[in-house]
Image (cartoon, rainbow, N blue to C red; front, side):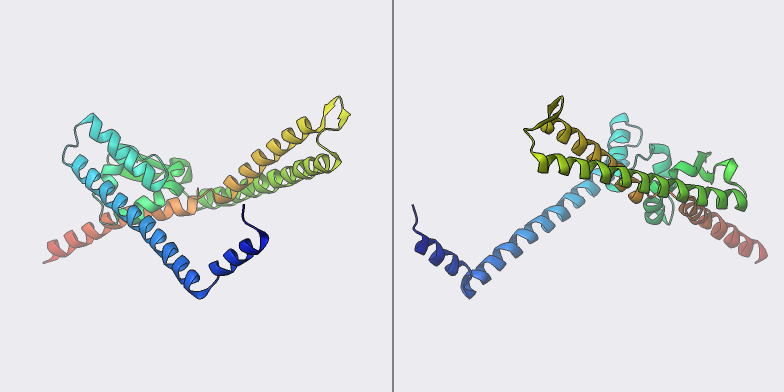
Length: 225
């Protein structure tokens, strides 16, 4: 066993300039390893995706492509839709907007459009404000009741978890209220982080249609010439 003086001496040695520099070097190397591993993993993903693209008719390839894209963009993108986006000149922007837009998109004949009920500007505006209201209600309601559950749980903790107040031990009620508050806080967090937006869906459609517009303009110029 180390005596108190030895422990103090050991801790003081750790904070010496040399030890601090050594610790910094170790941290830098550790971060570099993580970043390098992440870079290698992304390269391997791209290589696998490229390999799958060579054999598009294979069921296995279709599944792998969908899973790779789902892992990258945190949303399931059907293979047929993914292939159309992949062929688009603005594919990166379309993929990044897909998660926020997919709820409002209709895909048919290798083309994306907004669902028929959102064709008008008024419908888009109504949906925008309706969505904001729903998110606000979900967030504030969940956070409010989650906070109440947490306060009740902490009061039970301060009273003593092994104390019997209502039929059984406080620890049972404490665990229940903490569980409820955790679920409600998760609902509030998910509502706050939900990217779904009719505005972004319209941006997705405009971005997708921009290539068609460019092609029409180029054809018009050629016919004029």
